[in-house]
Length: 122
Image (cartoon, rainbow, N blue to C red; front, side):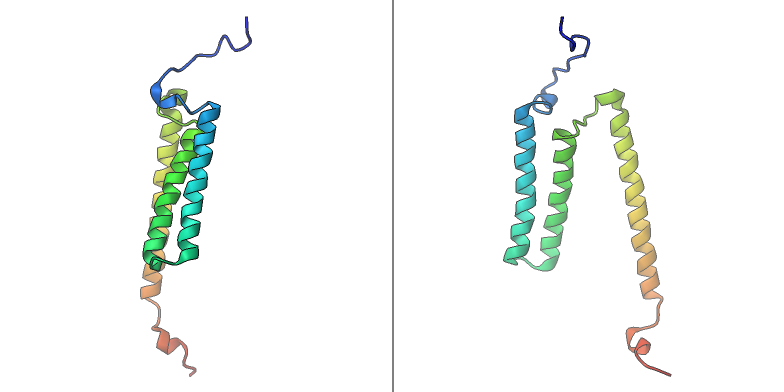
């Protein structure tokens, strides 16, 4: 009897590649592509700054998902769904913190003295 006989086996199609060597290679290849594309966009300078920034942020979000699926083995069934609930809670907290910080900084900027008055000495 092997030492791994007591472990439950999950045969769902979504998890077919997550724990295998081919799954690790797929995740690595996706990570390399998702890193190389933004690098090439910045180095070529073919797009304007705003479009480049939006593409980089979108690819970064995709890369986070790739890492969570292929390297952290996260899914809705692991640990009774508590892993996914913790992830959702974390995302909500980060969104609240970031949006609140940006809102405060925006209002601080709009309520400060105009830039042309700041350079003058009394």
